[in-house]
Length: 206
Image 1 (spheres, rainbow, N blue to C red):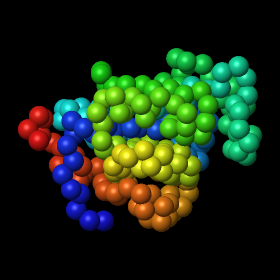
Image 2 (tube, rainbow, N blue to C red):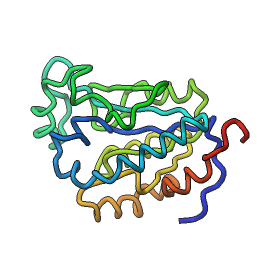
Image 3 (cartoon, one colour):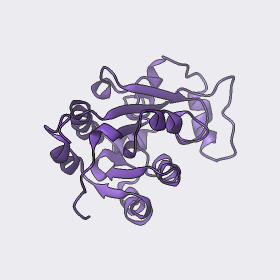
């Protein structure tokens, strides 16, 4: 991991993927992932606090369940995810951002389809509209959503930064392999401490 180059928070966004009650909270529909991601919330919380003070955009990309019944798609994961999310509706408890991570002024961009938040959604247009050039990714999971999101964002021209202690997969050793062998090919791997150290106290001085 090389030293992180200077990143202007004013043209950056921290995008938290599925950091919501039904995924990372108690009663998660993915208990193995929830168990292996329990350490994320404090680290992400500190990162988001610093990002807000430094002027970065904070986005929560959530899944609110399929509209009108079963989710579409042929992926085998829907065999478990589909029935488990069939009754999720906007504002229902499983769709709510983890309270420790949700701050005033944050953007919440939900989706009702797809296995990752950039698939035919408004996330990329919103980021462009806010002048974002660098995206810091946090949340879950390294099994599926994060590598796909990194690929989509990098192809769309965004710089990608992934703090390794702000993302997780299951089992943890597999998540490490994805970071090292996939995510690192498209983005820069860092830590929340390194990014917080760079952004802390910057405000509008950059």
